[in-house]
Image (cartoon, rainbow, N blue to C red):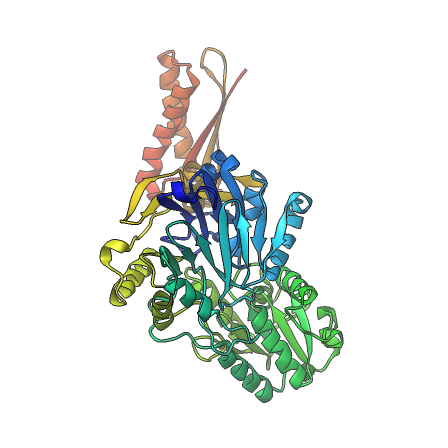
Length: 558
């Protein structure tokens, strides 16, 4: 490393993924070079009306684009790679990741018409790469998606380990056990691990996270005891779970059909890259399911989170293009609800029961295990790597604080633990870890093709419209401010006009009186007239029916 002797401190800047679950993005700064770790998305919560996706604020990275040497990826989940198409419109640097991770990213880049300009570099777990002056080790870990890696980025002060999303599965589906040896080797090396950034998602769960093998046994039991059609909903990215269902289908002589855009895409990518083994004669088109006996079919679908337009949700509502739920169907929801989605999942389960299905889900059966480490595995990661400093990541604040407590129990001094906020510049030196300022950060909202053009004011207006509706007041005046026609009142989402004629007539009279007063006082300034209309209606309507609709005056001059 050419500038090794000059560097006495390194900085890590989280642009997402702390104090929240999702939108993971870190920037490592060493000397005059930057390295980006992951660039994810977060799915909108209920108060983000009409928003499709939430991505990190890239301002700091874009301003320092000439210093960015590359992007390294831990795994292929949306909350780690979903923001890349938006970043790569502004930045052209090499991207390093494992084969499946880059395979899933390729699909996204094709959709955004960016693939031909991107430099994707495949790295095999266990290997090291050079990115500028950075040396990065890709260390195999287990997760709910194949090809997941922790990263060790070597610095003159010691390696920084970014453990990302992980668990330690002793009996993984693909036989690829986490690389304990490499983690321990880094922990025992000189000068030792500088800092550990570790997954906090499951810190509230005691013990160890169950192995994927447990799910395989449950799936086998369900297939063995089911005589009718089986429908399985899971995350499209959980290739190991898909393989388990396919294996059970093969064993019990069932054909497999797939539905849901992301399921079809991911299965195609995973088969092409060799991560999913399905005999071609086992796969049938979903349109052919109706012509086969129910006991010979299993359907793999998206919709495990109750998303309104996902395939399983459509089946539950009865408006799917090809499949309707019927008596005797067994529906297995092999996923846990992401925080915030519990209500939607519950609604979908209720609708499935109402249509006669037998529903098997996480709360009542072992059809899902988490991809995240529980307390004992988190302790093991800390004990293997023996970091000087510790930064809990990938969790809401309660998770970060609980993880910090866990780190204290295994011997990390309190002053060596840093609980980060998005945008913090975390500065590591031999002596201490401190906050060295902050950078512009936060949420950028994606709505359709618009990036960042919806902010707090637009969301406030959408909230008001959704709660109380809108009143449009149309008035035509002459250049002297005299009313020629109107005021006419049009409403949407406020009241049903035919049943509220008295209210509308009274409101119209109040606007007319207020405008007459302006006319008598020779007030012709449009902004004053509009405010007069708003004030005359706001007070009256709230007094009458305790509502605050948006009031939109439209003045036309002839």
